[in-house]
Image 1 (cartoon, rainbow, N blue to C red):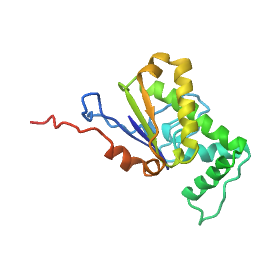
Image 2: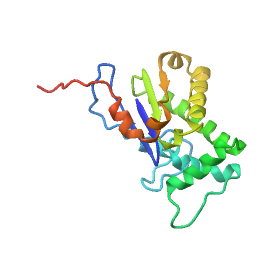
Image 3: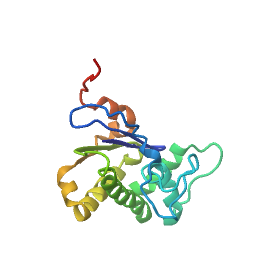
Image 4: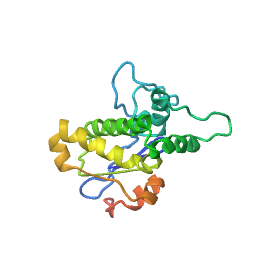
Length: 186
Protein backbone atom coordinates (compact mmCIF):
# COMPACT_ATOMS: atom_id res chain seq x y z
CA UNK A 1 0.00 0.00 0.00
CA UNK A 2 1.46 3.38 -0.94
CA UNK A 3 0.11 6.45 0.87
CA UNK A 4 1.05 9.94 -0.30
CA UNK A 5 0.27 12.63 2.27
CA UNK A 6 0.17 15.88 0.38
CA UNK A 7 -2.66 18.27 -0.45
CA UNK A 8 -4.91 15.25 0.11
CA UNK A 9 -4.39 11.54 0.67
CA UNK A 10 -3.48 9.49 -2.41
CA UNK A 11 -3.30 5.71 -2.22
CA UNK A 12 -2.21 2.91 -4.50
CA UNK A 13 -2.31 -0.82 -3.87
CA UNK A 14 -0.97 -3.98 -5.45
CA UNK A 15 -1.62 -7.41 -3.98
CA UNK A 16 1.01 -10.00 -3.03
CA UNK A 17 0.95 -11.37 -6.56
CA UNK A 18 1.90 -7.95 -7.93
CA UNK A 19 -1.50 -7.31 -9.49
CA UNK A 20 -3.53 -4.15 -9.31
CA UNK A 21 -6.97 -5.00 -7.98
CA UNK A 22 -10.21 -4.06 -9.70
CA UNK A 23 -11.08 -1.81 -6.76
CA UNK A 24 -10.99 1.95 -6.65
CA UNK A 25 -8.47 2.80 -3.95
CA UNK A 26 -9.80 6.30 -3.34
CA UNK A 27 -9.11 6.19 0.38
CA UNK A 28 -9.06 9.98 0.64
CA UNK A 29 -12.84 9.75 0.94
CA UNK A 30 -13.04 6.52 2.93
CA UNK A 31 -13.91 7.10 6.59
CA UNK A 32 -11.23 6.55 9.23
CA UNK A 33 -12.99 8.40 12.06
CA UNK A 34 -16.58 7.40 12.76
CA UNK A 35 -17.14 9.93 15.54
CA UNK A 36 -20.18 12.17 15.06
CA UNK A 37 -17.88 15.10 15.85
CA UNK A 38 -15.25 14.18 13.23
CA UNK A 39 -14.39 16.99 10.81
CA UNK A 40 -16.34 17.24 7.55
CA UNK A 41 -14.54 17.29 4.22
CA UNK A 42 -15.42 20.52 2.38
CA UNK A 43 -15.38 18.89 -1.05
CA UNK A 44 -17.25 15.60 -0.49
CA UNK A 45 -19.28 16.62 2.55
CA UNK A 46 -18.26 13.34 4.21
CA UNK A 47 -17.24 13.14 7.85
CA UNK A 48 -13.97 11.70 9.16
CA UNK A 49 -12.40 10.79 5.82
CA UNK A 50 -8.74 9.94 5.25
CA UNK A 51 -7.92 13.19 3.48
CA UNK A 52 -8.62 15.05 6.72
CA UNK A 53 -6.15 12.92 8.69
CA UNK A 54 -3.38 11.97 6.25
CA UNK A 55 -2.65 15.25 4.45
CA UNK A 56 -1.76 18.89 4.90
CA UNK A 57 -5.43 19.45 5.74
CA UNK A 58 -4.74 17.73 9.07
CA UNK A 59 -1.73 19.97 9.68
CA UNK A 60 -3.84 23.07 8.97
CA UNK A 61 -6.65 21.86 11.25
CA UNK A 62 -4.31 21.10 14.16
CA UNK A 63 -1.93 24.09 13.87
CA UNK A 64 -4.22 26.66 15.55
CA UNK A 65 -4.95 24.16 18.35
CA UNK A 66 -1.24 24.09 19.27
CA UNK A 67 -0.71 27.84 19.01
CA UNK A 68 0.56 28.12 15.44
CA UNK A 69 -1.12 30.76 13.30
CA UNK A 70 -1.28 30.02 9.60
CA UNK A 71 -0.28 32.79 7.19
CA UNK A 72 -3.27 34.22 5.38
CA UNK A 73 -4.05 36.16 2.27
CA UNK A 74 -4.98 35.29 -1.27
CA UNK A 75 -1.36 34.99 -2.40
CA UNK A 76 -0.35 32.39 0.21
CA UNK A 77 -0.42 28.89 -1.24
CA UNK A 78 -1.22 25.76 0.74
CA UNK A 79 2.33 24.58 0.09
CA UNK A 80 3.62 27.79 1.72
CA UNK A 81 1.31 27.27 4.69
CA UNK A 82 2.63 23.74 5.14
CA UNK A 83 6.24 24.95 4.90
CA UNK A 84 5.41 27.59 7.53
CA UNK A 85 4.24 24.96 10.02
CA UNK A 86 7.12 22.65 9.08
CA UNK A 87 9.46 25.51 9.93
CA UNK A 88 8.14 25.41 13.50
CA UNK A 89 8.62 21.65 13.54
CA UNK A 90 12.25 21.91 12.47
CA UNK A 91 12.97 24.34 15.32
CA UNK A 92 11.55 21.87 17.86
CA UNK A 93 8.31 23.76 18.58
CA UNK A 94 6.39 21.53 21.00
CA UNK A 95 3.04 22.17 19.35
CA UNK A 96 4.37 21.37 15.90
CA UNK A 97 5.89 18.14 17.24
CA UNK A 98 2.46 17.21 18.59
CA UNK A 99 0.89 17.74 15.15
CA UNK A 100 3.14 15.18 13.48
CA UNK A 101 2.98 12.80 16.44
CA UNK A 102 -0.80 12.97 16.21
CA UNK A 103 -0.74 12.24 12.48
CA UNK A 104 1.38 9.19 13.30
CA UNK A 105 -1.21 7.97 15.79
CA UNK A 106 -3.95 8.57 13.23
CA UNK A 107 -1.95 6.61 10.66
CA UNK A 108 -1.43 3.67 13.01
CA UNK A 109 -5.15 3.33 13.59
CA UNK A 110 -5.84 4.06 9.93
CA UNK A 111 -3.54 1.24 8.82
CA UNK A 112 -5.23 -1.16 11.23
CA UNK A 113 -8.56 -0.16 9.67
CA UNK A 114 -7.23 -0.45 6.11
CA UNK A 115 -5.93 -3.94 6.99
CA UNK A 116 -9.55 -5.03 7.42
CA UNK A 117 -9.93 -4.58 3.65
CA UNK A 118 -6.39 -4.92 2.26
CA UNK A 119 -3.86 -7.70 2.73
CA UNK A 120 -1.03 -5.47 3.95
CA UNK A 121 2.56 -6.57 3.82
CA UNK A 122 4.43 -3.39 2.92
CA UNK A 123 3.36 0.23 3.40
CA UNK A 124 5.18 3.15 1.81
CA UNK A 125 4.42 6.59 3.24
CA UNK A 126 5.45 9.75 1.45
CA UNK A 127 4.28 13.17 0.34
CA UNK A 128 5.06 16.71 1.48
CA UNK A 129 3.63 16.15 4.96
CA UNK A 130 6.39 13.57 5.55
CA UNK A 131 9.19 15.97 4.54
CA UNK A 132 11.82 16.87 7.09
CA UNK A 133 11.66 15.47 10.60
CA UNK A 134 7.89 15.04 10.31
CA UNK A 135 8.22 11.80 8.37
CA UNK A 136 10.07 10.04 11.17
CA UNK A 137 7.53 11.29 13.72
CA UNK A 138 4.64 9.95 11.63
CA UNK A 139 6.43 6.64 11.13
CA UNK A 140 7.28 6.27 14.84
CA UNK A 141 3.73 7.11 15.89
CA UNK A 142 2.17 4.63 13.48
CA UNK A 143 4.55 1.87 14.54
CA UNK A 144 3.87 2.53 18.23
CA UNK A 145 0.10 2.29 17.75
CA UNK A 146 0.42 -0.93 15.78
CA UNK A 147 2.82 -2.47 18.33
CA UNK A 148 0.57 -1.60 21.27
CA UNK A 149 -2.84 -2.33 19.80
CA UNK A 150 -2.30 -4.56 16.78
CA UNK A 151 0.85 -6.62 17.44
CA UNK A 152 0.15 -9.25 14.76
CA UNK A 153 -0.18 -6.51 12.16
CA UNK A 154 2.89 -4.71 13.51
CA UNK A 155 4.95 -7.89 13.10
CA UNK A 156 3.66 -8.53 9.58
CA UNK A 157 3.72 -5.07 7.99
CA UNK A 158 6.87 -3.21 6.99
CA UNK A 159 6.22 0.54 7.03
CA UNK A 160 8.81 2.43 5.01
CA UNK A 161 9.68 6.07 4.56
CA UNK A 162 11.78 6.76 1.44
CA UNK A 163 14.61 9.27 1.28
CA UNK A 164 13.81 12.98 1.57
CA UNK A 165 13.89 13.79 -2.14
CA UNK A 166 11.60 10.88 -3.00
CA UNK A 167 9.11 11.77 -0.27
CA UNK A 168 8.35 15.18 -1.70
CA UNK A 169 7.15 13.92 -5.04
CA UNK A 170 4.78 11.41 -3.47
CA UNK A 171 2.58 9.84 -6.10
CA UNK A 172 5.18 9.65 -8.84
CA UNK A 173 7.61 7.80 -6.55
CA UNK A 174 4.86 5.46 -5.39
CA UNK A 175 4.05 4.61 -9.00
CA UNK A 176 7.70 4.19 -9.97
CA UNK A 177 8.43 1.93 -6.99
CA UNK A 178 5.57 -0.48 -7.63
CA UNK A 179 6.71 -4.01 -8.37
CA UNK A 180 6.29 -5.32 -11.90
CA UNK A 181 2.67 -6.21 -12.48
CA UNK A 182 1.29 -8.98 -14.61
CA UNK A 183 -1.28 -8.51 -17.33
CA UNK A 184 -4.03 -10.92 -16.38
CA UNK A 185 -6.11 -10.28 -19.50
CA UNK A 186 -5.82 -12.71 -22.36
